[in-house]
Length: 173
Image 1 (tube, helix red, strand yellow):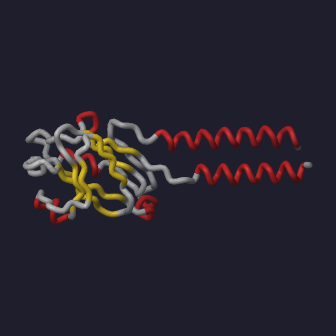
Image 2: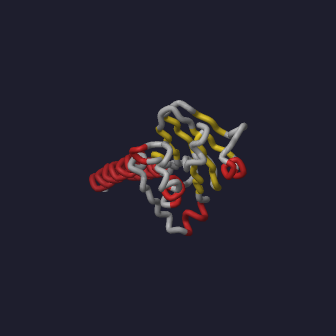
């Protein structure tokens, strides 16, 4: 009986560890409460300043909220020119979620004429796993939206399951 209980506990622990090891990304709100808007004339670097304060990793998402505007992901050259006729990604839904699916730079501009030239553009650098570990793995989230709650929920599930397993073992052995 003790051997079967031990096997059950080990199986539960492995299952729990696998469930909690899934990659959870952060959800960043671009522009905070203001959203994706043309910045004031004296603050045209606001989006790049914000992006440089964060540690983006593959699996994170960017949420762009805007009215009567759009967001495009473009090449570096198109970013520099503030112009794109063939963006890699385009959305004008007003609530765009963009998934950062690989490491490296991502270039975003507004699709509305003149907005990019006035500072509505941003470079997001997504760190590779090696870069993230080298920087201590800490992640800064200076957006007004908190990181995804699912990451914290997995840790509380793990804590609960470890509590249950310890309770079972204390009563069986």
